[in-house]
Image (tube, rainbow, N blue to C red; front, side, top):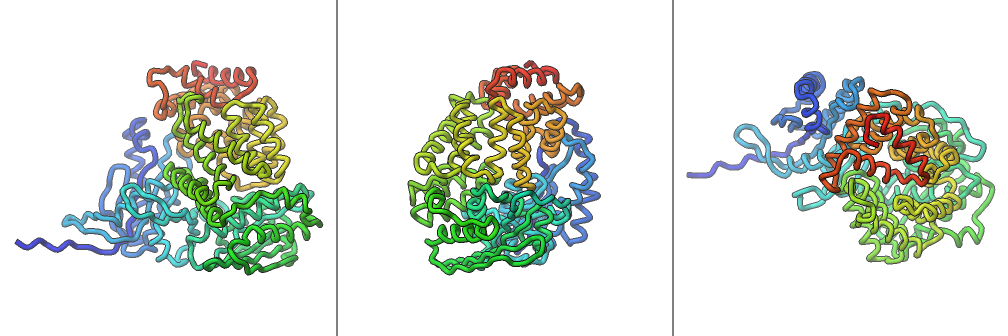
Length: 602
């Protein structure tokens, strides 16, 4: 009997999943299932119908759908996320339903009942698992077929290693923000500061290969770093200026939104071993071009070009040029430009949350060190990745027994031995030392980092947090405020540190406002912040909210605990207080008192 031929076709696939579904069902199964049915009826089904999608199957907390057009598939995913976010905005954070969505274009096998199988489906499912809550992650094949047909930006996330998928897959995050919140230029204008403020927009990648975006981004980042060394300038942090990527926004609007008097634009074209870099400096008030330059150089000259860009801008804006002693104090570039390239790829991945991304970032840093064992920044990248692993996977593991933390310290010390003139090297070592409770050493290196690069927002916020840990939160508050000013579109971890500085300064209401925002989306992802929120509520007399946060804290820690399984809630509290790195006994006692008022055994 002849075997029936296998039916195959090219299809655009989206896979959805609900974040924390098991927790939601466990808390209130009936309400959760009713809410999901309502979202499907009001948000998902209309979007599918409008864009000609077919539901292949429902999987309890997920959906597999097929589209004949990749544009329709991505448009549907975006519409679903926006509609769900709108309808869930008034739901308490602990009950909120949040989706992840992965989209792929690929070959599928059609079963007799209409089910779809094969690599095309598997890639979409794995991308969904890597996606951030509330986001949409698409494959490189999807990106290649969109061709600017949607009004959403696509942020390259590099090549991803997906479980049970042999080849690496290019991934892109869909920028949903323009329609779910005010666009960059729509933010309230910031007043211009007393000294010249500069925003460096992401240099355009003109290489013809979207995968080279990491390189042009790295050039931009290094120009920001070079400019940040000068006290005469106030330099807007990278992720604030990068929010304008892909927007045809007038530089005057950029300056207005970021409070910058000057804007730098540029482009990078990389072809083989040659580079063409252009840069121009624009007065953000008048729109006048003040300075422009073009460099056609071998790839090996990239570091000299960065020096020239920074020097030209400083000469115009701050009325000074680099002196010989400052040139000598510069961060030492790697011996092999290929090591720099690998570092940039790892740096891009290290800035994302999934554990798989941290693993890949480490691989890039290690390959960079194979080419140049003296490249200090690759060691700091590795140190940071190991510390992230310790923080995420080491809940309950005693500090002295945590191999990831020990390795982070060793790598940071190695970076310092190689390049003591790099502010980020001192920041990394100071940060790791603080988490090892080596307080004097931490303070010394973070002071050096701040003195070497006073315009680095990340250094300022870490220094501010360290001051609070060392018992001087009031001293740290101005630095935290400066960090937020330097980086008005700061990442979430700035908020974690800022809330602790405020709490330790006994400004509990202000700290609580931030902590409520941090824990709004999925509280159980933030056990430490839940505990600080409970303590703030305790000190403010908000007993019911305090007890609710305390209960969620215990639940979250219990789920993630990697230490002795027989411990009691009192040990959970001890772990939290120990991991808050407070030098003064009175600060630890103040935290414990807030936790006790929240009903915890503190």
